[in-house]
Length: 132
Ligand SMILES: NC(=O)c1ccc[n+]([C@@H]2O[C@H](COP(=O)([O-])OP(=O)(O)OC[C@H]3O[C@@H](n4cnc5c(N)ncnc54)[C@H](O)[C@@H]3O)[C@@H](O)[C@H]2O)c1
Image (tube, rainbow, N blue to C red; front, side, top):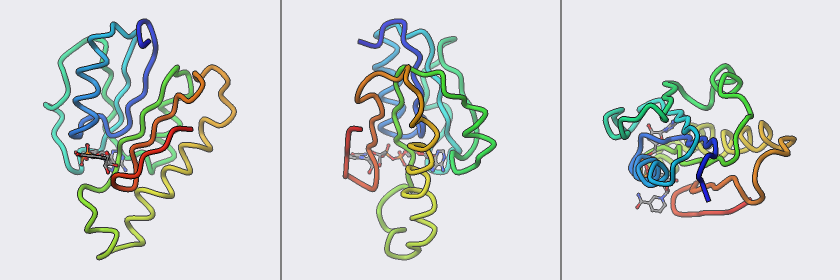
């Protein structure tokens, strides 16, 4: 399914994201682009491969989002504040990083016809997953 595909993994250095990258590499993708600000992870979680391009930064930044581009077959959005405590202690920051960012990613890719059907996977808002 992912053979020769170009895949974006947002939050790809995290627990789920880095395991996903390991798994995707086994399917011989063309390239995996990872965007992560290492808020709750370490870059060494990522597999070492010339097929992985790591972009350090927050996807909340328009500069980062635009630099990522739109030329992808699949997009996985796994960036989040770690744990769900922040939604209680600081709901505005949590909303800014999680909900608002997810909407921005939808906006960024909404006109992109090259994306495969149902190809943006959100594993988002702490254990609430949806396919679009
Ligand atoms: N871990 C689980 O067992 C589990 C189970 C079900 C669902 N989920 C969901 O999967 C998603 C990922 O969870 P996880 O356990 O991998 O968390 P994690 O904290 O290990 O990974 C999140 C990653 O997102 C990065 N990140 C945070 N904000 C960012 C930003 N603004 N820009 C770029 N990167 C950013 C972090 O640095 C980290 O690498 C969450 O939505 C979580 O609710 C996790």
